[in-house]
Each structure stands twice: as structure tokens, then as C-alpha cells.
Image 1: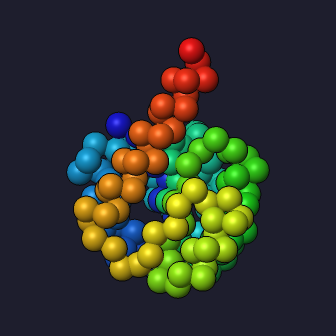
Image 2: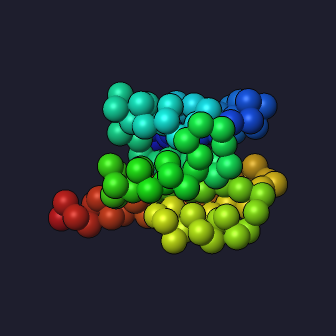
Image 3: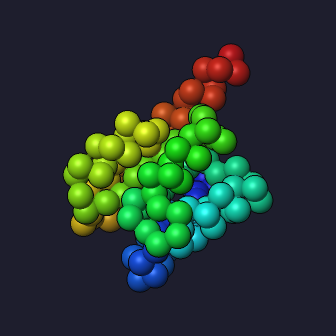
Length: 127
């Protein structure tokens, strides 16, 4: 079970993604913008961050740069319906860009791949 921070301004999508992650046994903290995400991080470091790019308030690009500065080892998935935004998000620190719309299977596959890679890094660093 991982602690996942989900940042998405679309309430319906946020609730759906939270339910998918919770069904897989993950603990999910969900917020609607980057500023709320930074506040949530102060309450505990997530194992993974999933963030939309275009949001009201602090948008995704600024949030990703702040996440990367505060949590340099934490994997970040950026989500957007625009491939250019995803490319730019990876240049700013996201580990992966996930193009909307995506399937449940694709979403979980990407989540699990990043969590597995992060866990292997921690084990290697501790050895």
C-alpha cells in the first residue's frame, strides 16, 4: 500500500481516480490544486504524486517544480489532455506524462511501475 497524493481540479475525475487507487489498497490524499497539494505534503510525505497540469489556483507546472524541490526522490506523474504540456512537465521534473483520457489498466500500470522503481531505488540505496 502506497501513500499517494492526487492533485486534480475536476471533482468527478478526482473522485474516480481516488476510488481506483483505493480499490488497489492505496491511501489517497486528494486535493484540487497545487497550493492545496503543498499544504498536504507538509502533513506527510507521499510515496507518489499524481498531478493534473491545467488547474485553477497554483497550476501543475508550478506545482511540479515545487514538488521536485521539496521531494527530489518522490515519483511524479503529470496528467493532461495535451501532449505538449506533458512533454514540458517532464522537462520540469515529472517522471512520467499520462495523456488523458486513459484507461484504468493504463493508469494502474503506470502507477505500479513508478512505485516499483521507487521501491527498488530505496532498497538499492539502503544496501
